[in-house]
Each structure stands twice: as structure tokens, then as C-alpha cells.
Amino acid sequence: MHGSRHRIKIRLFLLVIGFWMLGINVVQAMDQAEQAHGLPPVIRFNIAPGGYPPYTIIDADGRVSGIMWDVMQVLAKRQNLTLETRQIPTKRVNHFLLAGRLDATMRAIEWTPDPDRFAFTDGVVKAHDVIFSARNAPIDAHTINDLKGRTLLANLGYHHPALKPLFEAGDIRRVDVPNTLEMLQRLNAGAHFDGGIANARAGQWLIRQHGWENAFHIEPVKLDVTEYRLMFAPQWAPLVEAFNQTLLDLRQSGELDGIISRYVPIDPQTVPGT
Image 1 (cartoon, helix red, strand yellow):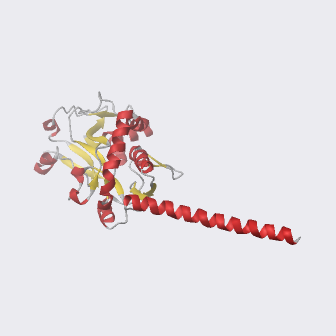
Image 2 (spheres, rainbow, N blue to C red):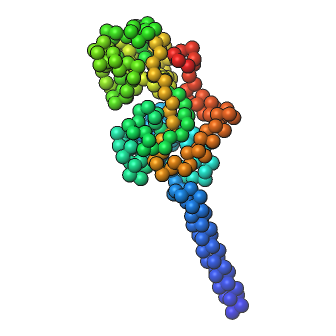
């Protein structure tokens, strides 16, 4: 009996030692990750409140997906980093990044005040501005001047450089709406607007989700095309080169096109400038 108790004590001792060593290994692994990058092993990525489909999508069950989310997952995994979501309103994102309360978001350099304060990757996907109009009442705009005298819906806070001079001169009346969904709903309801300016993929994703494929038309006029990138807080600058290499690998292997096509492939015949 005494020998049996002794063996049990030895086993318990070895078990405690094993857990202790496991804890040390986990801490060491985290320390190594932090030492390798000079950064914590977690990227807090902004997906925006409610998401911005198809770039970031929040399903009813809380699962996150989307073009930029999927790409960000690959970038984080290649650097042995964990990815976490945040839902920060656009107007507060820059402050959160600079204050160390957020690590990354999706953004175009052209839309960022003082972009030198942040670290940007190479372009991930092109963002095309287009004008959606009702299929039964198209504008038939082939040039920007063809839009004079029209009333266009636009997302609140979004800038459209190609149209800015006409907005400022009063040649085009701009009516702001909270989001692209409301824009399309108003156009689909036959409201007294000529069209709406929106990101091509965002609009096409919503149209497909709501079964509106036969309700809308994309005007042939060419508007702004910018590059959506991943924008990081300045302390992440040392890893941007590695992130860019991963993006290059994804592009050359065709995996990036595969990610984009899973959500909304752009048809060059329907989107001007592609």
C-alpha cells in the first residue's frame, strides 16, 4: 500500500511538472513572436460596424468573412499572428490606430488625411466608383458632362474626386444617404433620383443578395478607380514588407483572384474602367 501511494505521488508530481513546462513553452512561444516582430502576437482588425460587404461581412451567427478579411487571415497566419475583429466607426478609426487601440483596417491612401502617419500595404483590390441607375430609367451617361442637371445619391462622407467640380458648381445635385443599401432601395422604389454613386462590388453584392439583378443598370461613364489596401498603425511598419510579399504570392498563385471571385467578380463588360 505504501509503495502504491508513493507511485501516485510521483505521477502527480510529474503531471504538475508537465503542466508547468507546458505553460513555460506557451509563454516562450508568445515571447518569441513578440520579440521577432517587436509587436504583440495579435492583430486587431477593423471590420466596421455591421461590416462592409463584400469586403467584410458579418453573418447572422457572428461569423466574419469577406474579401479583405480572408486576405488579412492569410497575412496574419504567415507571420504566426492571431487575428481579432473590432467594429469601429470610420470617423474614429484613425484615432484608434494612432492611440494603439486598433492595429489595421482597409483603406485607400487617397481617402486618408495625412497618410504618412500610417503604414500601407500594396493594393489588394481595385475599388471602382460607378453610377447605378434604374434599368427602366437609365441616364445613358457616357461622359461626366452627361450627368449635368441630374440628382445623384451618394454615401455620406464619401468623396468622389471626378465629380467634385460639378457638385461644387451645382451642376449635379448630391443627396447623401447612410449606406449603399438605402441608395439602392430608394432607386428601386422609383424615388425621384436619377442614380446613385457607389462602389461597384458593394453595389453588385447587395443587388445579388436581394434578387435585384434585373432592376439596375451601371452607367458607362468612367469614374474614380482607387486601390483598397490594408492600413496599419505606424508600429506595424516593420512587417509591411512581409505582408506585401504574401500579397505578391497570393496574386501570382491566383489565390487572390480566387478569394475575390468567391464574393463578387467584376465583369469588365459591365463596369467602366476595368
